[in-house]
Image (tube, rainbow, N blue to C red; front, side):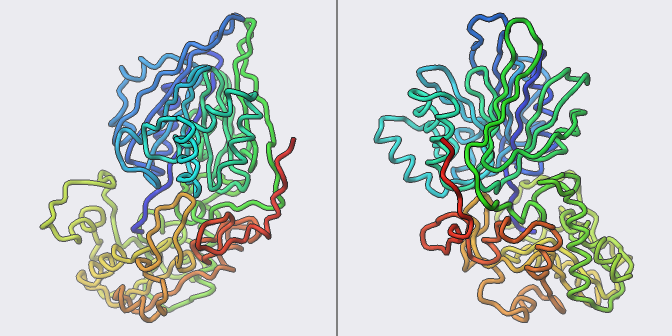
Length: 489
């Protein structure tokens, strides 16, 4: 609980028709990854052998996807190539200037970019670009990537420019980029953030390709998942000229490494359960997390119950293995977003009661095993436990489907400073006392790794261990174990 989501990106290349409507639906499927703002940018390309670039147009705004776009606004976006974005902020304030896609003009045309991730050297790169005379219109690391790409494109081919950008930036990034009439997908060399590609054939939106942070966006459009974009890979999608209604798809492996560093919290919390990430169904991973949690921390109780929604699948797995009845303690209000009117004098627990209502008949005088995906600060968890006990619950035993979060994330998750983390320098008894639970247990790191099914050297566990796969000032780096090779030339 009490954490933010990750951004979601999408890109669409169609042989004909507008990319705006399918991107709208794709962003709807990715809404869970960001609720601050949404945007779509499109480019019209012609296949008559003439100058294909007719420019990039975009619409973006604050709020949910349905808040930003109407049918009329979507119909105004004319272009068969496009990218989309739903945002929550990791760098930059939450305002329209920082909403994405970000659009940058340069001498050879326009660049629009949508980014999921976080750069750890954005300040240094921005300073260098400003000294070079480049003017920034936002305070996001996304514009740093866009301005850097614009600079590199002035003297290099597309592939060489992208290679130079990937050499310069440090951190996590999955990117959907429009450069004039070309759609580009990029995944960072460690594959920290997810990205996949699918194909649309003879469906409601014609033929073409869709790239997205998660595979349900492809499913929503009636497409077929092809595969994950590989770490360090760049995909180039361009309409074929001379009258052929086809999209050319090129793959360029611009860098290689002996290891990846996939974010474990995509599997624990961020991604939809029906997503396939790096060949693994997230639902199955979360079921195994619940089963492993029951193996590691069994307990006699009356019911197993989840904290909705992120704890549901793991709670089912826990109940299945422990043979304890699964029952819902809470019903979630599906119409409450991340923000709502809350005057300062209103108590914080009204926020919990507005989102979650206790099913008193299910919990009264019961010993409950309450399963949640993770705990960051613990403030929301404490309110939830207090709410249960006010409704007559006899005992609350909290079981967490991740190891304790003991360090910040610098790579795209909005976790606080160490001192604000409930597990930082606290024993289980101290955490339990703070949360007002009768007991608390976390999944082991070994249990998490086995549940995900990816070798430890290919996972980013920075927030759980304090050791990071990239160099971050003041932090321990395990980069020497990754042995990233030089960029291919």
